[in-house]
Length: 288
Ligand SMILES: Nc1ncnc2c1ncn2[C@@H]1O[C@H](COP(=O)(O)OP(=O)(O)OP(=O)(O)O)[C@@H](O)[C@H]1O
Ligand SMILES: [Mg+2]
Image (cartoon, rainbow, N blue to C red; front, side, top):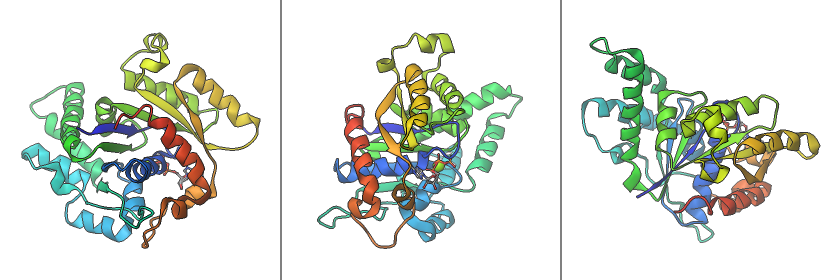
């Protein structure tokens, strides 16, 4: 059964989609694993990185996307595999075999669909909190059907704490929380860690770092001392990976889909080294 790895932070623009795709690439190419990425963000950034604009637009028209799947499961038992794009990505192995990466694409309809789901569960005067809980449970169960489809299922979460994100956090075996080393990140990490662990600050504080279900990852790290001060502040309260992702133009460039397949070396260039360090460190935590 597949291992669910969510990449989440309440804060936007911290590198969730970049890290999600990078991990899909690393586990598929270096680990030889079957990877499924589920894009839980209406912005669909990881879908666009993995499959390019044209294929993504086609997936919207053909209803092969997360919104269509979750909506259809309101009324039927449609298998999740029917909504998945097989063999996506612009990456190949050194001997020119395509990476084993599948994608359940994101959809611009995803936010509207979540509202629709809430009203579906709010029928018959159901109290709002209860409707919200049922809605998150609908998502969790729907996502769980992905377990047999891959060795590793990466859940790229939207910023904020939507029902879909809550469901992903509940389902995940492990959560990676990328953050920018700055003065506001601490609040976002504190908040999401409480949701992941389902604990108030005191209970969370009493939980040893190695018993928690999440690991923070410093991203956009610049040389010099100031970033390290912010990273140390987070690491004092939260389990934090030793690997740090540097601020890197080559990593930003890898964000774009290329119509020609490339090796990881060609795609990531100088960002390959921190990517390999991240993969090596994560293999200790992600038993696939
Ligand atoms: N280490 C890095 N160095 C330089 N640029 C980066 C780095 N990590 C991510 N980026 C760039 O920062 C931008 C935001 O990254 P990304 O979309 O992955 O963040 P996100 O957390 O998924 O955003 P959102 O909250 O909008 O979903 C992208 O243009 C990406 O290429
Ligand atoms: Mg994103």
